[in-house]
Length: 336
Image (tube, rainbow, N blue to C red; front, top):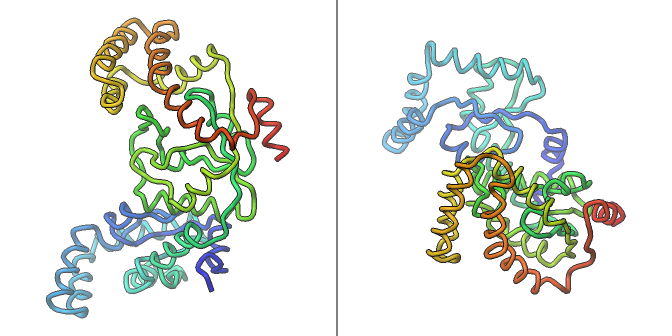
């Protein structure tokens, strides 16, 4: 049986079952399972010490050390955190790396009738990997358009869509950082969950590059997306300027733009980058009105983003199946 057809996990994730991950925080940061909260049995240092003990003295000694490290008030505090979460989420399930000792101990200590998920994180991860690498590919429609055309807002109004930028917590451009991004594994797991929930349906996605910040769209999925039909969202210049101001500038500052401007310095050139940096600084000093920022935004679009978009569009011209304003695009996508 293929992992993506695992009936137990299909049921688990179709119901958005809350999960308690009792692995150490460092393991959770490397790769988290959707719908999970990290309530560890051991913290990172305790796990490290137990691991050393296991290698040097064997399992029995490691278990004994673990019980010494997690005892007394520390033990009671962790048990209460598990119990509190389960009281609020009675259907919650528990897992560790392989569904072994850590999750078994956690379930015994909390004494609330819970049993570990067999196979633990490793099984859950393989389930999501199988949706990326083995499951039948969905049919996609890409939503494209110039930078600032409002694609993300339109995408949110479409049934059966995946907002890849939201999963990556990044807008997908040099000025796209929103702060923390998930790890590659966490991003893939979130992506796979969306694929599972939209299995057999045609999915609308934004026309993206392979990399979104520090995470990468899985190659098999990206290739399917790039081979799919393309719908172009068109927008008037004035509206486009307002969209960019609202989404990027209004709640930001000059330091953010000056820092990220260096990401395009190599392609844009030193002279243009320095001149644009000066324009940005002056605009923010003038105030937070569109009229003060129109100049540098227009320059950046005309001399950097629009040429890149037009170059990519030339390679995709044969895949364009529709062009139009928001209302017409939404009607077309609804029909298809």
